[in-house]
Every structure is written in C-alpha cells, then in structure tokens.
Length: 87
Image (cartoon, rainbow, N blue to C red; front, side):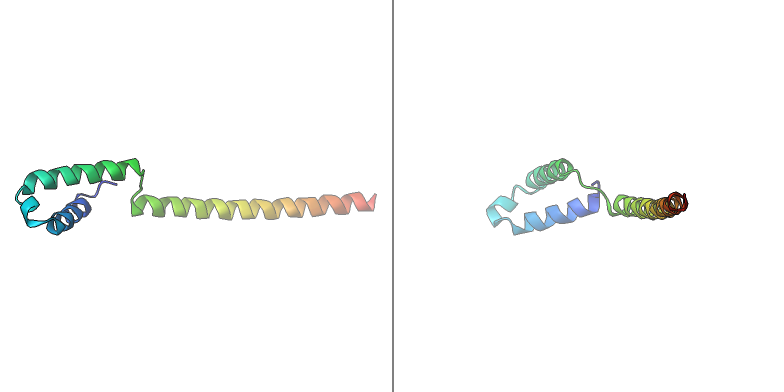
C-alpha cells in the first residue's frame, strides 16, 4: 500500500493530536510516525483497491467458466446414464 497522500494525511492527524510540548519536536515526530505507519502497513500485506478490483474480476470470470464446465459435465453424465439405461 504505497499511497503517500494517505500516509501524509494520517501523520498530520496524529501530530495534531499530540500534546503541545511534544508538537515542538514537530518534524522528527512526523518523520518517525510516518516511518512507523509505513512499516506497519507493509507488514499487513495490504493491496490497493485497483489490485483488489482486478482480482475480483478474475475470480468472477473463473467462476463463470467453472459453472459452464459443471453444466457440460452434468450434460455428459446424463447422456452417459441414458446410454447405459438403453443397453
């Protein structure tokens, strides 16, 4: 998840919530918070919305193909059953 704007916004919100004495350390804290958040999010192994949507479409196509194959298999099994019953 590499979204600099997201991290910048999150860091700003966190630094605004810090007590006044701590805010004086400003840039150092902002930098450290951003690094910590980035590392934490990378550990979560998150994907972007775009990647998720692509995989959802792939899954949908795969599911549709599977349903068609199951239907063909059912038809073949019915045909085979009818052929066996005629003997």
